[in-house]
Image 1 (cartoon, rainbow over the protein chains, first blue to last red):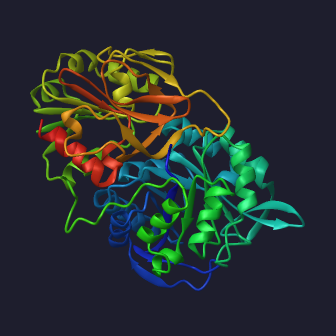
Image 2 (cartoon, each protein chain N blue to C red):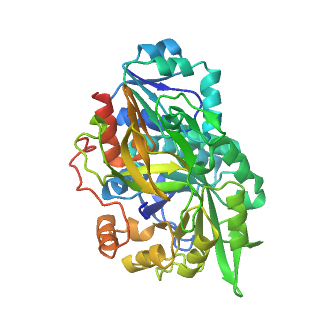
Length: 263
Length: 195
């Protein structure tokens, strides 16, 4: 059985990891490559790096950072932020990214999903969706949750799958930053309606929150940021706790002192 | 020197990065002479098998790969191309491994692609020296090779077991990505280098 994945998400600005609480109040927390290497050693199953630079300079910095990440870490990683064309995706693929995540640009032009998937395969395309519940309807948002769209979450997720998305990364803007748990029932329904993997994001505050979204919420992977960055939940402890309650996870190997454990 | 066959088949850089982390010398090349002269050869690949096969053919490399007598490692779609044929196209493969490649059947609760970390079983090769069954490695694929006499590792997903790795004479193939499989993957690549 395929293991449930634990994915730390690192927001990157000008080469440094930052984490915004509810997308505001940015605060630097570390070097992107060093943190990635540490997470990989701790047993993270994948990493997501989101470029939140607004400037062109920041974007160029990000591409060279992706090259250093690809050389430094030996687990898969997804990059996102500011990808608007298949050529943007190609630059990141060439830099060594395993997957790209697209969000607002896919909503503006859904054909972007199919154009990238046709060229590089569905496994390369993660469609990220930010949505909030408005009068009982899960409404997609863009630009970091600041702009509402007409799109409804479940129909957009199905369309993204049909257009060639390899995974859906859904963030509940109602839960993000609250540390009060994920939107479990929404993930359960997404998992029911889709045949591609679903990544849960937004709301992780405890090991129990993560356990719930991976079991009752039926998510294939749980993504979180601050609880990992600030060491609230060490990944080895999280994995042991999940395994103890019967959640299939990849066991964390004892850390090898210095370099890879090529035994 | 390890030759990584460069035929425009996706994230080729990650295989080179993994070799670099292990301190192995490698080059990316589509030059038959360089490939034939290499001590070891890696055939990577992601994406569509039929498209990958077409690119390998365009570069005149099918016969080159089949003629190699030194250790060869196909990874993911690279491994699938070394099988008899694939439903993805469909397309004829190089016929090195005696396996058919088929899509995972759709079934309730079975996500396709098979994406993520899964456990290996029935390890039977020097490629896995020092490793136990139950070791987790990273997979991303929608098509898989049947079990066959060339199977040297299995994995369970969807309707049962499939070939996680294959071997015939000097040819090896892994459906998973050793270059993305943490310390377990590094150990497998190290074992390949040491063959």
